[in-house]
Every structure is written in structure tokens, then in C-alpha cells.
Image (cartoon, rainbow, N blue to C red; front, side, top):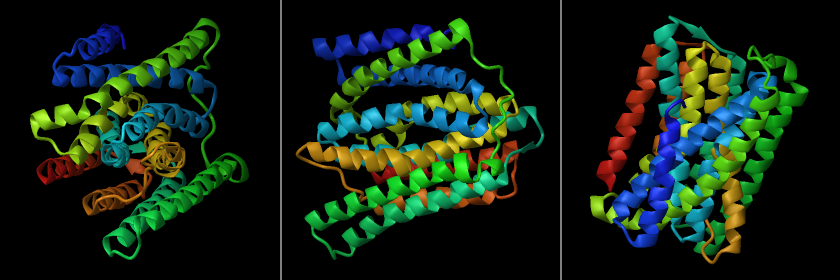
Length: 347
């Protein structure tokens, strides 16, 4: 973050390029770089605000505010009618957090510490919730591809599933913070934020949220032109490019705490972010999208469903023992690279 302020020039540069009719490719990447820095700054601010809480509450707060970028991008995209890109970005966020961010955290922590331990019960609950989420993605898509429902029925099914997912997410919060609080780590080993540091964290959080809204508007407005220029498919640009830009907060926070040997918090951030995308952000976007002419549904491509299912499988296997090392992180990164390349060639 020391030299990150230099990247703030990219947001006004993207805005100027859009206003003056500059090259869409430059506008897109300038907005994407601005999103990366803004999301990372938001990650720092949420870590400061969460310093009074333990790994469970702190990770929940970090994941919630860290997903603000994805939520804003999704709403802006749906309003612009780019539902394919929006759904791909949601899928990409889950894949990015589960494989890319968690893999980078395992590698970073493993290079400094031979073996790192975390709460296997929390990891197991997160994996179980993600199985529920993947099932929610699979059911409407399966119904769509077997041709047993019309468009109206698919939208109604998506809306009904969104409500169920929100209830499941709310129940998971009650489980981890109320009824089974004793089973999850709540002690923080970080010094609590006080005085000016706390004030600056709040100020940065407000400013970065406003900046992310502006950057998302710019990014979405030139997505189609950029994709056409490079020959990228809408799904690829959503799954990989937009998702990586939006996940910068999780990258920054999870890798940082893993380097400090706080793997419970790192895992809570990554798993919590994936769960929130699937159980909170996506359902909320589906519900809110009904204020626009083209509402969002939960019909994903078979490749997207398969990729998310595979990522959940390997994450469940790797986290089952409550220990991590750099090689396991490398395996997660390898699978992410394979999936990203596959989406690239799929168009």
C-alpha cells in the first residue's frame, strides 16, 4: 500500500478516456487497475475495522465489505443488460477466492512457515455451505438444459432459490456467531484500532466505495468493445478479468494474514467471500434485478457449473486435515490456471 496511491491516477485517466472517446481497451484496463487498488485499499480498511474482533467476526466483516466491489459491478452490469458477464463474474469470484486467493495465501504462508494449522470444523462448515451453493447453481441450469421449463418458470425458480440461499446464509451466521460460537475462534491477536487509525479506516472505506462505483460504471461501459478487440468471449472476460479485479481486496488481506501465520483468518476471508458471493451477493442481485427490464437468473453454462464443482471438491480435500503448506497452495493455483485457460479457449 506504500506506493499504491500512485495507482489512483488510473481512475481519473479512465474517466477522462471515456468522456473524451479514447480507446476502449485503455479505458477498460485503466478502470480495472483502479478497481484493483481501490479494492485493496478497502481490504486494508476492513482489516483495521475488524482488529477488535477475532478471526471469525473479522473474517466475516472483511469478506462482506471486500465483496462490495463484486456486488457493485454486478448491479451496474445487470442495469446495463450484461447478464452473461455478470453471471460469469459471480462464478469467477467464487473460483478466484476458492482457488486463486486461497492458493496464493497457502503459498505465501507456506514459504515462511513449513506447516500452518487452522480450524478444521470451520473449514468443514464452509465446504458444506458451498456444496449447497453449487447445488443451487446446478438445479436451475439442469432444468434449463433439459428443456423442462420456460423462461418465466426459470426466473421464478431462480428467485425462489435466491430466497432459500439468503435464509441458509443467515442461518450460517447464527450458527457461527451465536449458537455454536464456542466452536469457532473469536480471539484476535492483532492490536485493536484506535483514534486516528480507526477514523482513517472509516474514511478510506467510504471513499473507496464511491471510487469502486465510479470504476465499475466505466469498466462495464466498455466491456463489450474490449472483448471484441481482443476476441475474448463474454464469459471469459467475466470469469477471469473482471473477477480478478474485483477480488483484489481478498487477495491483499488473505495473503497478508497468511504471511503472518494467521491461517484461521485467511481461510475465513477466502471461504467466507466465496460463500457470500454464492449465498448472499448472487441472490441479492437476482432479487434487486427485478427493478430493471432484464432480471438476472441463475442459469449458468455447464462449464461454469463444472468448474465451480471441481473447485469445491479440491478445496474440501485440501482443507479437511486442518493443515496447509505451499505445495497445496500451488495445486490450487494450478487448477485455477487450467480453468482460466479452458474458459479462454471456450470463447
